[in-house]
Image (tube, rainbow, N blue to C red; front, side):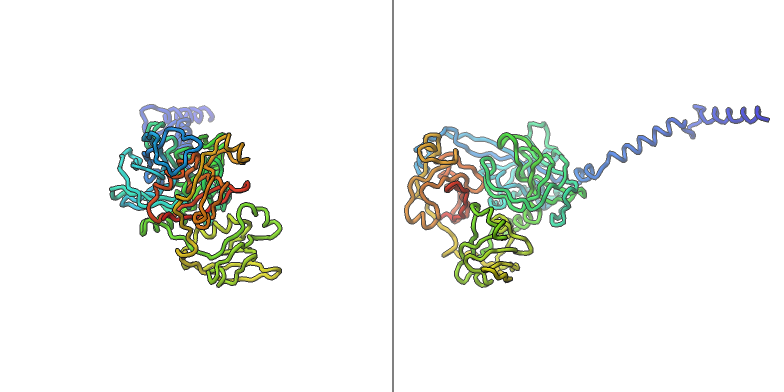
Length: 469
């Protein structure tokens, strides 16, 4: 009985493996086919899908500008007629399309001082671009290209980010040195939120309320999108910490501007060409009081404008701000971050302490009064010299680069708050390394343009906002 059964089983197997029968697949091949399909499916991760969704809307931004090539002498005052030779140089960054009719968002420091701007689409097409507006305070700029029906980035939100969730950074590091215009994709996680970054030797300007990520962000990535795993843009890549100077690569400390702020600023720039700052009518203790919050539990108010928004909210000199808009205030950077996202006319709840009594009030911001709050300067009453090793030793300076104020008129001192001995280190997001550079940067501004000067005084870095007249 067993032999016929065995013969039938062998015959069945041979029939199944017969090469002429295309309807059957050998068991080994079937297994390999299934494994290949499973592997192909596993390769298509959320990162792959997110990158594919965003890449068509990412552009390269290339700018050309005139730059002086001769090093000025230490006693070259900035107001003297420029005599150095100039050469045209180029630099690059990244941007992304927010409107199909050619509106691109990028970083302000990418296009600062640009003589020409070229936007390169993901398919390699080069288009001349026009600067619509720029805001150095938030490091956001908007440019336009003459093209319609462009792919627009999907927009997400940064308000509900989870520490540790996956994010994707897209950009054009090192521009065309990599050979083509396709954006580079790096992946990481959200390392932290609400980061405030002080200026340093390689990174001028304040960065407030930033998203921190360990996704690699390298030179040329500035202005590119940071996206969540759904392929929605949640931030604008803007700055990195490096281990070896400003041109070094990423060490896992990258920062992005929240998308809500970037888009709000972009809309204002599109409407008016500039950003109007909300006025709160108060000033707080700055960097030299960074540690006070551990004992004070908040930010100390140093001055309140009479009948200003803060005064009407019940805040007075020496009060301690504890919370604003639902955010705990630990130091002046937290307060600056709150102000940065306010429009004129916005109302926020403020909790503060007077003596031992806590109070709560509603602060409604106003327009900056041009007669009192706006600091106006002609700057012709200011003399500066380049900080050199000799100047540093002679004056006992703690800082090695910048422009030292050696003379200032009473009018300019009253109007700006600057004084002899201050070392100018940055204007907006441009590092100052020579005396002549101060004049070059300021002379590039239009009439009544607002700008921010960062300077060192008594070992502390301070800033003041000015308007050119």
